[in-house]
Amino acid sequence: MLPVNPVLGIVLAALLLAAAAVAALARLAGPDGRGYARAVVTAGLRAAVQLAAVSYLIGWVVRAVPLLLGFVALMFGVAVWTAGRRVTRNRTWWWAALPVGAGVVPVVAVLLVTGLVPLKGLALIPVSGILIGGALTATVLAGRRALDELRTRHGEVEAGMALGLLVREARLEIARPAASDALLPGLDQTRTVGLVTLPGAFVGMLLGGASPVMAGAVQLFVLVALVAVQVVAVALVLELVARGLLHRDGGPAGHRVG
Image 1 (cartoon, rainbow, N blue to C red):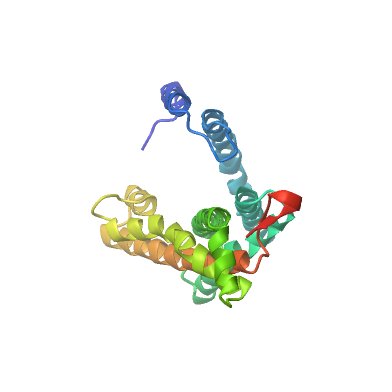
Image 2: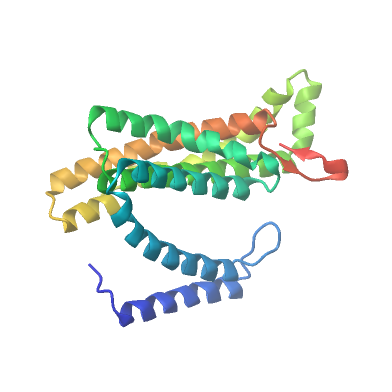
């Protein structure tokens, strides 16, 4: 669909620099005060390097099942690290493996067992990547929103405990609405598919020569599977936060938030 030539590189560089410039002018920054302008450039450069490497690597790993499974495991590990470190900087980050894996692993297993997805790289890697990416996004959004809410409304948590609620129950009452908002992007994408956007799987299959009906069926599967994976991820992140297993350190004497 796009020619790979110097013009493409120039356009991509211009878009990346424009995005960084807008982020700098608008002073977009995270909770720690770090501006996102540099992060935009870094993310774009990393994406270019990683996609170039993966493009060559996929052609090699699809030749053997052990290599294929190892590559999927690598995708999972990177997702857990990224999600966990986005939610918290302390040692509890590794708990992100549970929400990322709990939805993805059963779905992929069912697809392999039923034969809907063959144990071949050109099929398994894209499907696994889409699902792992969706679980990563839901885990990050739910975890950050839940912990931010508990930090802001810690007095209400204490009030709930004073009324007789257990710590887990008091945290759930405060964190649940905020964490649940992590489902909105996936739900909105599913609701508006075909009316507002034509997602990548649908367009890709059409460009590959598939019929519109087949492309629509594949895209429907991807969207429904993503919603299922993200619901599981959000539910488990909320439970981990409520139980204090996934938390942040802050406040006096290392007071745990979440």
